[in-house]
Image (cartoon, rainbow, N blue to C red; front, side, top):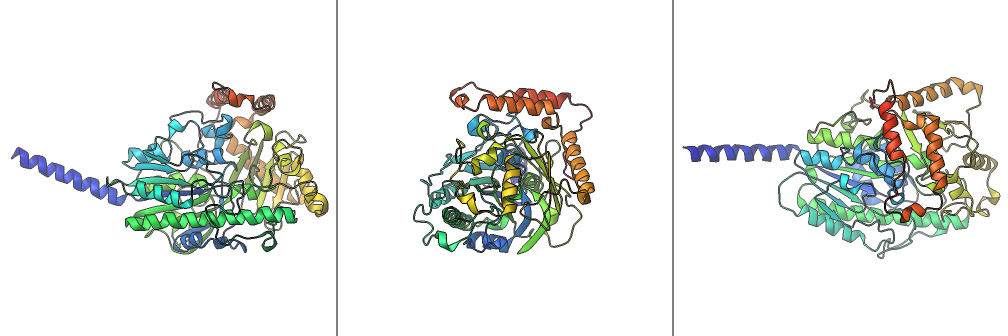
Length: 509
């Protein structure tokens, strides 16, 4: 009788576990590098992206998706933890010793593992400390910027992950190198028929159009076509498993493209990214949503799908109400952006806040050199990027572009843009009395967010201390110092803990 009872209980437990796993979707997070929504499904005239277009046709495409910080490591730390940069601490590049404040910060990996998920990552993590993300499976851990590993290699590693027969739900993050610099015309014989310079024009927000830049732009699109091929191979591997119908698929870019006024900035081309969500039975196929959404929303969405309770408040919102066709009032009114320049050579602190129409940029150290801008516009900058605009490139630009570049090089205290009539942010309205009320409202909104979430950069003393330490280390010698540690990793948590009146109630408005 006892033996019969034992096997009956075991059978019930196995049935319960199996039922629980069936109710929990797998989660596939696909991340591309350094690209905005220059995809066919977003209406780009030069993009050849049939696989991503197909994913959008089967799921939901978000037309207004944003990252909190437009550089790799901070952006990735944000969507993995669901926290803003000043909340998780990763306010610069991992390769430059920036890190999260705490190793025990809850994240995609730790939270889903507690719910029984098997976890894996293919491609780079690029967040410190790596020990905070105890993946069960890792492959191709390098950035792979030279594309030595092919799209087929990523698909093969995904196949190896999918093939593990444990029956548990899984979370897999696949991180591709395209479209990061160098913009390789071809790699691994892809794309088969690459674009040439005379077949494209630079994106209008760049403000410069020369044969040299057209070559960079053409190869950027070639990177995107290669990325699309890689995504197609990955989705084919998922389909072969028979689990595609029970898999929540996210696709995002980690931030915008590395062209002037893109990556590293708080302008729209830096912060705006593609976001596609496919979840059979839960998403309305081919739907396009225009609400303001953030990559901070990915973790809350996955946790809700998996039946996992977040640990503490998260600023993002679960996307489930937007995945169906019905209208919803569960939307946010504002999106916030931030940058520190990501390493000492490009140090410059800025915040941004936007609503559906207007955008405010706040520079707490106005009139000082914006080293991010110089890395794109000044060939003498030690970290000038090949996709920037040389002096010759800028010789025939329009007056509004010249004024925009000058403003970017030495920003005023505030910038204000009407994104409806000026989507590329060329005409600053901050001193226009007609928009004074809008400016005041956005300044108040930004300040309230900083207070509520205990942003150390709200305090001018913290801004000055951070910048001073960055300037002191512009020779980058710290990279050779195994024990180097940025002081903000200790001072900012102490400031946040001691700040009065702050609730850290993080839900975005």
